[in-house]
Amino acid sequence: MPLARTLLQAAALTALIAAGTSFASSAAQADEKVTIMVGGYEKQIYLPAKLAEALGYFKDEGLDVELLNEPAGVDAENEMLAGAVQGVVGFYDHCIDLQAKGKFVESVVQFSQAPGEVELVSTKHPEIRSPADFKGKSLGVTGLGSSTNFLTQYLAVKNGLKLGEFTSVPVGAGTTFIAAMQQDKIQAGMTTEPTITRLLKTGEASVLIDMRTIEGTKTALGGTYPAASLYLQTAWVDAHKDTAQKLANAFVKTLKFISTHSAEEIADKMPKDYYVGDKDGYVKALADGKAMFTADGVMPEGGPETVLKVLSSFSKDLQGKQIDLSKTYTTEFVKKAS
Image (cartoon, rainbow, N blue to C red; front, top):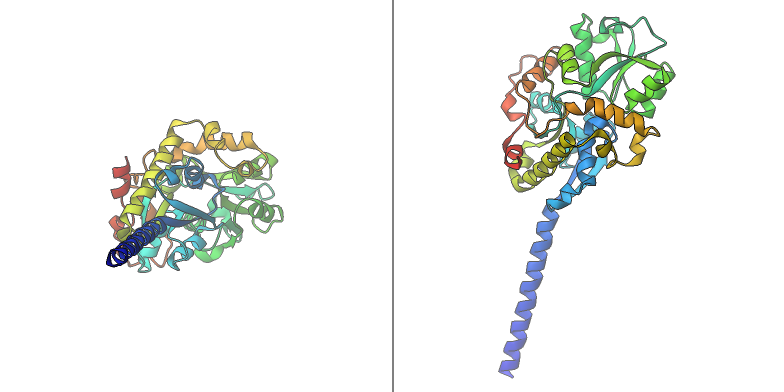
C-alpha cells in the first residue's frame, strides 16, 4: 500500500507540474496578444498594417495581432491612452503633440517619410488657388486634433491666416469625405489614397498641395516629414521589449516587401474591397506613392525637427515647451530587425 500511495502521489505531482507548465505556456502565449488600432486601415498610407497581416509576418513572429479600424488617428491615439489597445498605426506627429501634454509615446517603426496627403479643392470653388484663400472656408479633415488637421492648420498659418479664420470640419475619409465635398459642406480638404484618385477621376476636385512624394513634401513643409508609423506608449515598450522587437521584425519585413515588389504585387495581397471598385486606379496610386515608405523602418534624419517646426507654428500646446525629440521615437528595435 505505501508503494501504491507513493505512486499515486508521484502521479498527482506529475499532473500538477504538467498543469503548471501548461498554464505557464498559455500565459506566455497570452502575453503575445497585441491589439493595434489603425487610423483607417484601408488608407494606402497605413497599408503596412494590413499587408503584414496578409503576408503572415505577425504569425511568423509568434504574435497574435488584432487590427482594429478607427477612421481618425486622434481617436486611435485616445484608445491607446485609455489602455483599450497597445499600439497605434498613425502619424508620428502625435508623439510630439502628446509629449507637450505630459504623455510619453514613441514611434517604434517609422513607415513613411512623407504624409501621403493631398489638399483637394472642390471644382465648384475655383477661387481657392492657395491656402491663403482658405479664409472663411470649411476645410475637411479626418478628425479634430488629427494629423490632417495639424497639416491644414500649418498650411493656413504659413500663408498668413489666423486659426479662427477658417473652419476645420471632421469628415473622415473615403465615402464620407466625398459626400461632404459633393454637398459643399467642405470646399477643400486633406485626404489620402484611394480617396484622392476617386475624386480626381470624377472631376469633382483638383489638387492644390501634393504631399504624396518626398519632393512635394519638402516643398510644402520645408523638409522630410515622417508620418505613418507604429507608435506605442514608452512605458509599455519598456515593459514588453520582446514583443516590441517581434512587432518591429514583422513590420521591417513588410517594408522590405513593399520596397522590393511592384504596386500590383502589393495590391494583390490587399482585401479587394480596398480597391473601391477600381483596382487599376488603386495600383496606379500605389505605384506613384510607394516611395513614401521607408525601406527599413528607421526614422529619417532631420524628420523629427521638421515635424516639430510644423507643429510649433500653430500649436499653443507646444509654445514655451521644451520637447525632447529623442524620446519621441526609437531605432533600437528596427536596427536589430535589419
